[in-house]
Length: 550
Image (cartoon, rainbow, N blue to C red; front, side, top):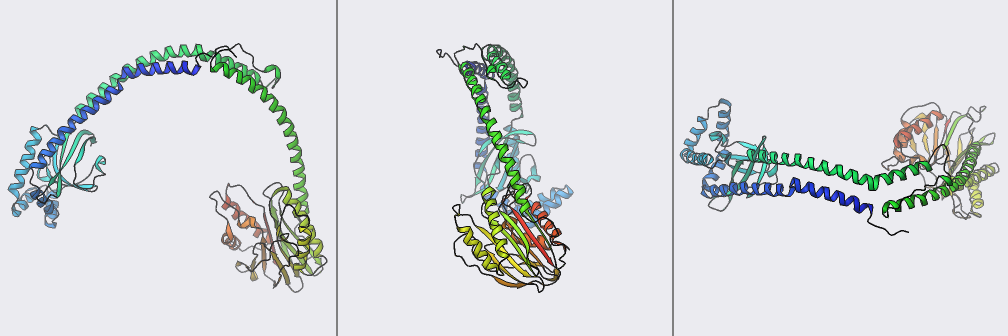
């Protein structure tokens, strides 16, 4: 490889650095900031000195007395009436009545004199009390300022008591002022109020903005000149080689000719910088892309073959579950409906119903642990074992015990299946049910409210060889309704990671009185879909409902 010179990054960065340096010098940003700070400090120092001088000269005990006076109900009523009538002699008379009129007038006059002599915009005494200030003396407001309550400016919102506040420049009612505050102490050393000084900064801010405006205009002109020079230089050293690389890349991705070994980029780039490295990397990448395309073509063909086989498996699994309803048109004793929606192409849930003999009906709903092809294969075996054994037995517990022993043999994947299996004598409505770790069924007696039937379960099938399963008796009467399901119903999850749960399931069952199990299952599924929203389905959803008419 040829010896590497200065990189393209160095060249471009040098141009940018030179332009920024010239722009920074022309605009004199640093000088502007320093100048602004010095001016603000100058006015702030003057405002602080004046505020401190006035605070030291002001009688703190008298200010405390004034503060207590404005809190008196009589004063508030007098001031309120003065505001309404515009007759401020009422307040004047009140001060005279309290014997402090002469002292207050003297204090107000001295502050008005300072306001005129010191070229100050606002001069006042106020008591800072959290978000508000209670004004006691206002050199601009006169007697009307006594007892006035105003909101504190946002710049001073963090101060809740009468303290020293460093001067700050702020905008008050579209006017720029430099404000400073110094506390007034009484003879006991308590800060009873604050002297506020606001110096007019409108002219200063205006001059500052005008200066900044001229600097910006000058900076823009100079920046444009350097940008133009920079563009010409960058185009020569970077843009033109990159364009050549772009043309070579487009040629490689030509839609008409497709990818081929002949279209690998070939250019004369010897810039001894990152562009040359980029050119080399692009050539290498194009070769790897061709190799990848060949591999992905083989993988895609294999994936399509697997997909086709999964589609067949899906159809086979669906065909294994009863899907013709009503399943026994000649039997008028009951109405039955069931659905299964797998989370993947194939699932591990299954349901089944069959006539064991002319007077006994078998109902099965089950859920295999895991998902996908392994669960589907296990489901096929479990379903076949349970149905075949049920034809030879009158005990759900014995059927599950047989299936358990058979499934435990060679179960190296350690799969298991939860099962609810019931046998119902059609003529009497008497039944036996065994629950191997499955969900609690729900029942509605004589068309009334639905409720869950909770009892202790046996362990799941295929967890341990030789397992015995409990069974319990029940009766189903005309008008009764039964609903069984897998955990994909109660564990349906929305985008907030909340479960549908048993409570919402019971609410969905009771939402509407329906005449068929098909409509019942549709209502439950609609509530599940509404709850889940756009969240993906994580588990198979299987439901079976039966309405007893005999």
